[in-house]
Length: 294
Image 1 (cartoon, rainbow, N blue to C red):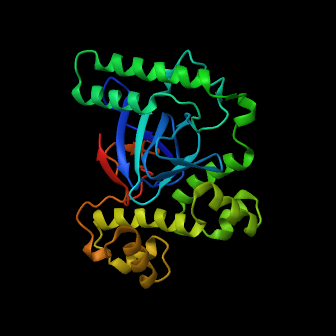
Image 2 (cartoon, helix red, strand yellow):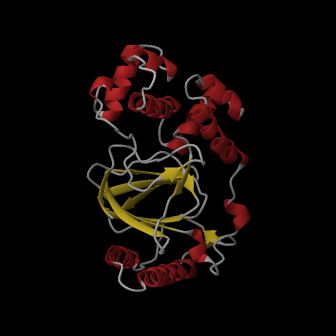
Image 3 (cartoon, rainbow, N blue to C red):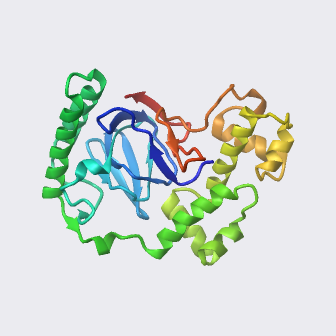
């Protein structure tokens, strides 16, 4: 079920994945891998630890392992993504020192290295994995050398962010019946403050996020309807109070009605298998995102 932790299945020896999206938009999430985000064209907003940063063409940002973030690109913007196993940074003290800001401010050859690594991963010539790892490590050394660093105690999650992580898991497990009031109580926050906090860190309202989570469950039931449930029954099981509301949300997010949904349709649109745990799948990328190249 859609939730908040993403673990990518990085098959292949290089332990690196590179690709590009048009209109990239994903839910707030975190993963064990590190991530370089490159604005190839247009504007790409990256939210990191409750702060939004606008990347314009040529700008890049670095997200360390375990950090909450989401990406929302402007229409027709192209975003390059380079994800890699955090163990490739062993020796760089990435867990002891982190960037003061995720945005890379110095003129570094991030795009050039990104293109070279992508080519190495595609061609898979002899020793491509070692070559890609060397290129990546060299780039990260320069980033950590030149960018301002912050002490770990200044960037650790606050109790509110830790509670937020737990709340997303709670929403995923109880999406059919959890309410706005339940979420406020779970966080121990007043309704106005929780509403503001959730939107600032998630980039969407609680209601919008909950609808996406419920819809993911509905799509799973439609694709695996072993009990021959009606659309109305599925809508009710997923927490929608009326069939009219369900149909409207369904069409707004997928572009289809429930009865027109293509067979084996998946709400998320990333080619790499992602898991929340050993039993639940999770992919934070929304269907408006178009994968261009890997």
